[in-house]
Length: 135
Image 1 (tube, rainbow, N blue to C red):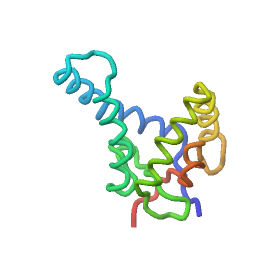
Image 2: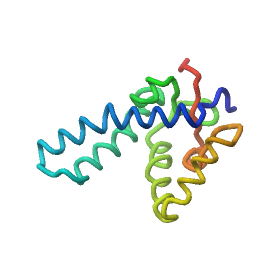
Image 3: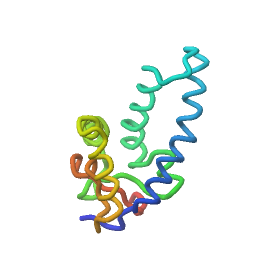
Image 4: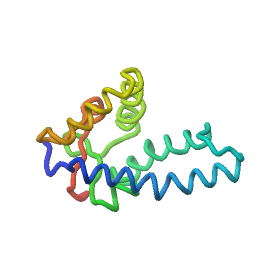
């Protein structure tokens, strides 16, 4: 049962904070290790693992989500696992790429306009983002 869904602006701010808190240091580290100023496999892999693993071990939080007070949970309120996060990140990314980003725009509108605040990636993985703290 969906309770206290996290809205569009809070989720967007969490994503931006993740980009600043994790993305910028990761890009700097990647530059030091590889000398590459553009995106590379190292950066992409670490970023993917961050969004895949951290929510499974930290009760649905990423650093940015924790700062803004939202977390990812299953629709039944349960903890997300690796399989759930694979669906939410990897499969949803494929959908967004295949549709040339159109599904991503639709998903943003869904988060902003739906009562349950679920985007396409949430529907695929049977998750939602909530302001409820873990029990």
